[in-house]
Image (cartoon, rainbow, N blue to C red; front, side, top):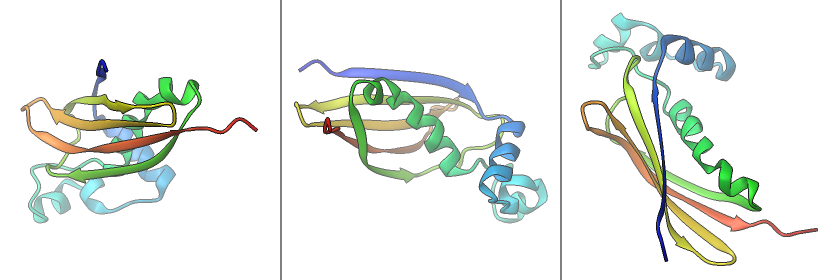
Amino acid sequence: MRLIAIVHHFIVTENLVTTYADISNDRNKVHLCLKTAKEKGFEDRIAHGMLILAIHSTLCTPLLEKGWALSNVKSKFVHPIYIHDKLELSSTITYHSTKKCTATISCTNFHNKTTFYGKMVFVRRSEN
């Protein structure tokens, strides 16, 4: 089986983080206040983990358009993602059958530090 990889690059902007805070109502000050973020031991304000995972899920669009449904996501955040970080999101299909598809996922910042990694499982949608 040939592995298929999709890669996406983007920059975490202040507008993206504040808009996500408004939409999600997650106003934890480590995302919005530099002083609080530094008091908590971070270098800068950090992005919401679920925001980055949601952006990462857009890499799945080709599978969703071909009749697959996201069944399960497991991820582990191992390094903070800061506002203004340049990120590389990647997804690689590692298993594929007629009923199930598995992909590894990861995010790396411009310092080449892995910020999160995990796995997504897709199942073939039933045609009703």
